[in-house]
Image 1: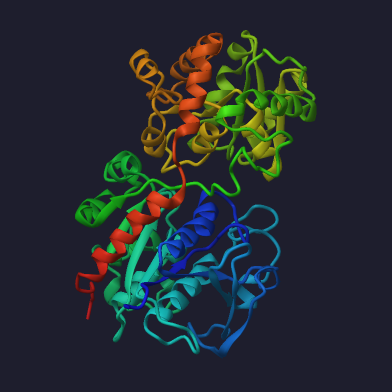
Image 2: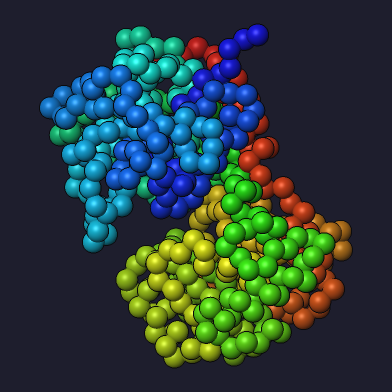
Length: 493
């Protein structure tokens, strides 16, 4: 019997060890799904504070020098909690053992040495591929994620010896990891990589462009987004390199961790339910209204939103129509954090309408689950959305989403047109233009259908029937891995 395919998933975050957004969900769930399909899948993460203890990790091999003029690295090996996925932690205290988040300090400012921090993560990932990590196994596939691991494909491409292929997954083109070119020597990158066809970007280094140019294959998190990022509107200056690699670019819709997000056994909601017991959902609505001090009105539509408070997520569009929305019998439950000005406007609305608008600033995992379970309608008016997970959670929890037709939202939500309602395929509501008028019109469509209890119940059931588990997506990744293994390495020497 052939040995299983060895896959190292390099990422800056993976739930439940480290998470700031959707990448953390993918980092925790996809390796588990790949493992279930028979691959030898493992994780590589920075050793942020507390991760060694949380993963039960122990030292692996001896400390080694990964980058010049930098502290030596000690790898630790443990397990991703609640899984069988081995996890390697890059223990470099001066870079990773600090208060704050993975990317920002306690005041929300980017760490000034992020280039070196994630250059180190990329370098160690590539050293796995060249067999230079003391005591570690060598992967067949190095699966890199977002700009924080974008240099790893370049390190591999310029390595003297390696049999490891690299795949680079883009989760959001808006974050590119752009740093001064003066860091090239510190990052141990050859100057031959610094050109228009390499990682040079307007006289700087782009970690994201590095991954796009040098990886053996590129993926992104939905088929529609794979097309969108080849346009000037959503490529953020990198449409040329992406078009050049179009034949090696694949869009694969993200999946959902159905163990943590499942209304039939969700530990964060007071009343479990499924399609056959959908009436029990009302108990979660009542619990949500009580927790948020909203009026206890069972028949008033409760609209939920869990989001980063940024223009990308269309939060400003929602703020612009709240006065119009409140002319309808409606309640709003909002959870998220982001730009201070947007947070301030939401806080003021909650003060002005305490019985109808609830706003929680920050991230609260249990409350996020309760909003999905207790709300009637979920808002996702993103200007762009590479994949999105909350629309999937919403459909799984019988909470039809109102979403803009972009990226993964377009790939996962079927608009409740008369035809889609009649043939049983409708799962939510879509609008096209990123305008307040189109968003409000779409919300009114949802409110109108909400009054028709029979059609609304069918819409909820349609959404709950969808399979958003990682199984299908993981199988597609396995196909890509197999195709990569059959092709020659992309080398630069």
